[in-house]
Amino acid sequence: MPDKNFHFNGFGSTAIHAGHTQDANYAHQVPIYASSTFVYDNAEQGMNRFSGKEEGFIYSRWGNPTFREAEEKINALETYSLPIETHAILHASGMAAITTLMLSNLKSGDKVVSHFSLYGGSDDLLQTVLPALGIESIIVDLTNLEIAEDVLKKNKNIKMLYLETPANPTIQCVDLEQLSKLAKQYGILVACDNTFATPYLQQPFNYDIDFIVHSTTKFLNGHGSAIGGVLLGRDVEFMKTKVTKTHRLLGGNANPFDAFLLIQGIKTLELRMIRHCHNASEVANFLNHHTKVARVNYAGLSTHPSYEIATKQMKHPGAMLSFELKDGLQGGISFMNKLKMCTRTVSLGTVDTLLSHPASMTHQSVSAEHREKYNITEGLIRMSVGIEDLQDIINDLEQALS
Image (cartoon, rainbow, N blue to C red; front, side):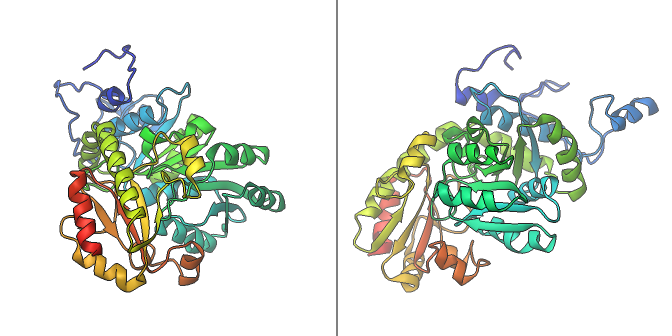
């Protein structure tokens, strides 16, 4: 393994080597620590670990060596080339990470502001679960900075701005730099879901964002083999105390095998994203000129409303897109049923190309009124472009659209 004092110049080297600690038996790969609990040399050592006087593992709901390597690896990627220290906590899922974020920062009477077109689970959490706990959610168009500032001015109980960029499934992007500056003027925390972009394409901490969440199930794992989530924060002390306490009590801990699979997936993140992004750009251009397609949502198209924002804050527009079929719901059903190679399923970020129908799948829990408001129409298809041969992807789309 590389010397701990060796500086990684490249993102790919960081993805492969960062976070790894040589275990006692000199295994090349991180071992899967399939142990619910950890033992002590003596009673005093156990007391010191529980009190925090001594570093060490206690119980896998509280932490695990396999979790730690994944946490440190993601930490290194989200802060790659940035002169800051952050802390990461691995979770059982992206939703578990978001829940820890919300409940460690918000209490009854507080308000959280977010925008249109969030992942369906996030939207449901904000609209149904948090209000039952006395935490109000305000959903507004945060692409309009005047509207955003007006909302922040009028609501003194706003404690957090929750962003998702690019957003699911319309690929709407919000300006991280400007919204973060605005929030700081009013003493408001800012959190960002960076799942679609990954740290390879976008680093929210570069814009003074306080928290980042990922569904590690997606691009970070890359193979659809494990569920997971991660929460990262700039305030290391707060992350190690209040956030860690909340995480442990909620019980949304990861498991060693899924953490191991995540670590292996992250090692090829850079290579996969290069191919994902190349294919997505070509597919978006193909669909944009197809007679059966009414609209393509892809931040790399100059016609997309978020083109300039994406160009400013992302290395590349990414691998996610959605498109509106002219024949609406029936057109969507027909298209999905004709696919021969691309995969009909929810989720995203795997090496194979995945297509889903948000209105009836990922965003089914979102009311029809809100779906219409968010431009999640019945003819909308979401596409996670994989790393297959580009021509095979296009050929499958062509025959399914014909």
